[in-house]
Image 1 (tube, one colour):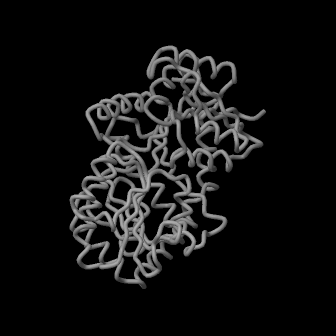
Image 2 (cartoon, rainbow, N blue to C red):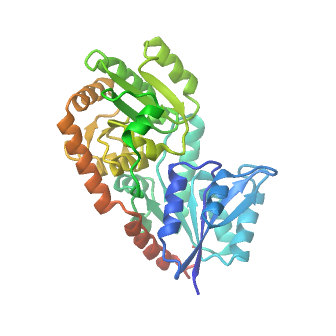
Image 3 (tube, rainbow, N blue to C red):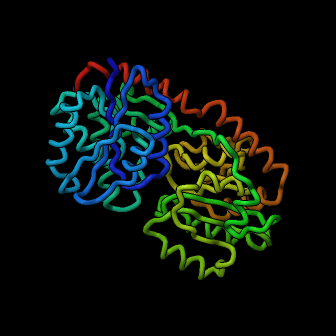
Length: 373
């Protein structure tokens, strides 16, 4: 009989973490495990993540809750765990971690928390970060998506024996998009150096610092464009920053796109300006297309970006250092080619979902039958 594993993710869109879950579902041994995907849903509303999961043929469950952290959610999760005879609950995100822990105790089902990192972007988020650390300490096992996040979990008081480092991975593209077609779509002439960045428009991604770096690099690189893909609370601030620096013709905010990995085929450089990360999926996506990466030394980024070999690594929150690195990479074609090749080889050899699935299967086997602590 197949073990039944429920992944609980509080999300109403399809971004990096959601795509990671989908790819994991595709790679796990279907003869041994039946994976289910659950999420929270408000009454009379749809959930894009669940809709996408169902379209892929996954077993998806919607859990309706009246309050964001209400006890009704705990009872409903516990009922699902019992009714669906779940062997292991895997939680992704604050709400799933907290409500899932309480529900798993009620249903006597072991809980695995997947910890991507803590951003601390606001007072509210810092409070959630603190609570989440407490619940990670109470979990039966915690997956850290990078070695760095594993160290952070240990500092937060999670016992070392319960920390399992299983790194983020990437699905290598089956078909490479045509470079010229992608560039024409976004109005980027051949010969113009196209810098691409992607992520939520929020403080921890530090797109303000990236725009400042671009302002400083502009005199040295006369023909370049920066495209930032994503949505979030800082859109108005970033738009104002672009206008104040007179960069409207150089920098564009394109909004969220589900085709982000595909458009990377037209880029010359990918830029990560984050202040904090777990292990950034966007960097892996860029490497999968052989696009050279310039990135800040945030979280687990150095575990994939080896300076001078698979990318260029710069200090956190240092616009001048970032500008200098962009100028160097943008003006050196052979360097970009070498870094792009190094990144592709790294991802192809060490960051595949098949390898990740084997690690998760070992963790599932260790958890099955234990019951919740």
